[in-house]
Length: 176
Image (cartoon, rainbow, N blue to C red; front, side):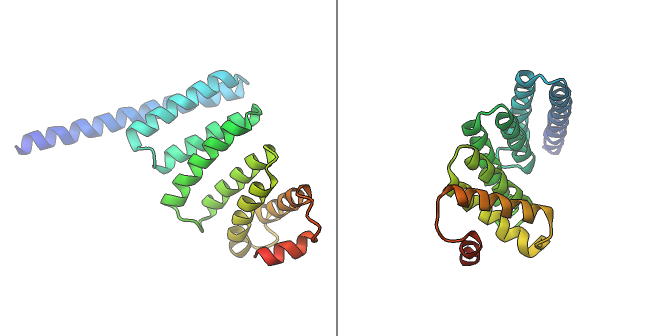
């Protein structure tokens, strides 16, 4: 019985090793295709990498979330903002579950979701997610940090698009 357990253990390790090796190869192909400007093959490679991540590590593993984010960035670059939003939201769900809602990486995901909503011209939703990022970055990184400054500027642009009469700074103070 112990021999059987040991055999299963080693087969599992070999399977994981092969899956991780496949991931590395697919990531190299994705980066190469991206550098060559071949978006279609880059997307295909990223989707294959995502499939391997999901099978080897699970749909809620942080590495799977990183891959979702990379796919979202490519869709965003191609102007397919709805598809980008879908993958940014998948990455965000993983970050919230694995890192928590106050983690700096989760703030990055909130920011990405906010950008996708802004690109879709849903300014109220963009504000909501950018505010979440701002609430994390401001106390942890400070007002002078580039992330904090950028997301504040983004919020101001989205706020102006909503046509709200209240001055932005007043709104922001109230929102915090």
